[in-house]
Image 1 (cartoon, rainbow, N blue to C red):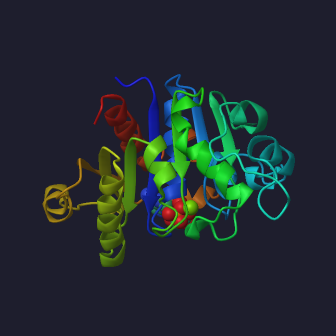
Image 2 (image 1 turned 45 degrees about the horizontal axis):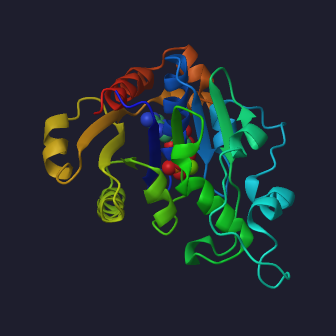
Length: 260
Ligand SMILES: Nc1ncnc2c1ncn2[C@@H]1O[C@H](COP(=O)(O)OP(=O)(O)O)[C@@H](O)[C@H]1O
Ligand SMILES: [Mg+2]
């Protein structure tokens, strides 16, 4: 069993990345693992999905000007040199937000022009945190990402070893999943798992696996579960009630712990 688990959750918009990230985080935590959930989506909806009250303000890392200056320097145009590979191992102890027993949340926030890999201090800091994810103290790190491909940079590839590529059954989502798999492999992420979400009852899993699974390390299925919408935004009641989705998530977590 791997002692450090570093998972990036990716896929087309709306396929269930944030929901699954939160569910998986809670399941690891229930098993006694110390979990860090990282919200890499500028929309910042992982906190509420994990069950943190929306009234609780969270300052994202991209807005921590003092920390950024301490680690990176003030940057070009502001009269300073930039440190491109700072030691960010303290970032979670300083800015992690408790999100239940054994879970902390780190919110990255938005960076202008992140996709173009701009050399601004905020982007430099966030990418250093991702690149150095292996050095973070938490046993499990789960990174939720925004839709699209551009955020899937080198930094993520260096810090993470497993990509959960989420899709629903639509043609578009499956195509994006295929592209993301190729990208992940090219970048050197060893394991790519296709997670087909919102699968209807009675679906032929074997047929789906044969149709879409080529090239992925493995394929997992998560059922469509109306329970999730009933309890939005938090997944906590979904777990407490033992809604249908929980068994599939539990099996996924078991698989990850067993090395898939
Ligand atoms: N297995 C599921 N069954 C039913 N609804 C789901 C399931 N997974 C996600 N959803 C719903 O789909 C919508 C999009 O999910 P979200 O996690 O926000 O997607 P993403 O982060 O990929 O944009 C949400 O309304 C969520 O409640
Ligand atoms: Mg999301």
